[in-house]
Length: 481
Ligand code: GDG
Image: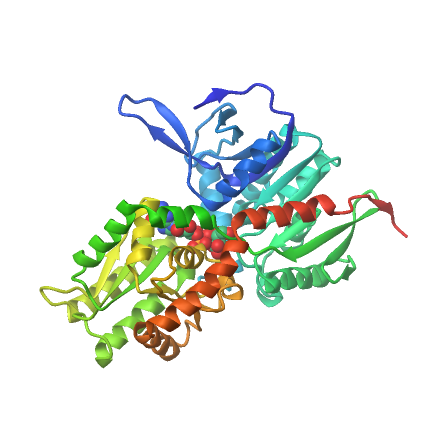
């Protein structure tokens, strides 16, 4: 239910993220409702936010929507208005056409445009002002992700009394790449406004600390940076890995529902009961290695190592960032490749690649995971990759094999996967064949070991670890020695 909120400056915890954790639902009679979007971050933070009388600052997802703060499921939501031009310059431009490709190892060329940067600064300032207005004295602000890297510094300037955390969901690139960014100092400085900066991998934190050492005069010691503020006061900033996870119990519950199990059987049936179903689930993004995966699969059919009467590849590519040119081009390339492979190898009764450019409800995704014998996660670069963890969460005694890129953060936790280098097409083909032919006992042994660890390291444990580090952080500023 929704009710409006007038008193907003009293939240002990304020989450700041590009998106609000709700979807706008328009009923049949035209009435608008808001529903919390199912996602690990929301599930993990909801109890924490409720307990802390918390608030969430974010964008509702469409341009030019002006809304007063409102409440959903015990959370105060503070909507930010983005104009059509903000969306184009700050979101599609700087966030998704500069930072995203730069931070993912320039798989696509980043574009550096000064008007995008100006919009990024402007919008970051508005998010920071909203957070600063909402947080209670001595409270906590937790900022999320690459769209908001300047917010920690801006909040600190407005509210020096609050504790500030920042979590970076995507990779932080090696210095040789990072140094391309024309605003490399401003971004580091923005992030260093936080008390604790969380990354997915040890390597990401290391890359960040190296960039700080190369660009700024602050001394570092292991995971600490000693920052001197404009006033001459010193404070310490911690930069450490906190690998994100999923709500394992929730996925396992969905996977046990009879209708989901029945749907999984139906999917297998619909695909003609092949010996093995291979599955890919990704946002349609050039970082996910979809083309490399299709190339490897196409070659296995060409070589005769696999046959369409035997195996089927299901590729869900959910629509994403459709107004950014690099994404339009990628879609064309993928659809050309799928069409070529299917044109050559399909029979009237069998299709090589079942390509699905749709977004599905979560239950359907879980049914697909249950139907798939082999899960292909072949990202060229990925902060974590939650799909890999979701697959492991729902597989148990049924086995299944995860083929996982070493360039996804998840590779650090899911050591029972078949780890691959997606640039090595032959290596990937070998791993796909090992996966298709792996004895069931080996499958379950690997799966169970990964599941055990995942159950312990779920998203609640992640949020708790980050907030604990944040609250234990020594925030006392001291005079420069
Ligand atoms: C970023 C980082 C990091 C996908 N298609 C559908 C659908 N999904 C769900 C998946 C999964 C989520 O979306 C995607 O998460 P990933 O982690 O795989 O990738 P990104 O979107 O790139 O996320 C990433 C993550 O942030 C968290 O820190 O792991 O590295 O890039 O949960 O299941 N869900 C539904 N329908 C779809 O069609 N319902």
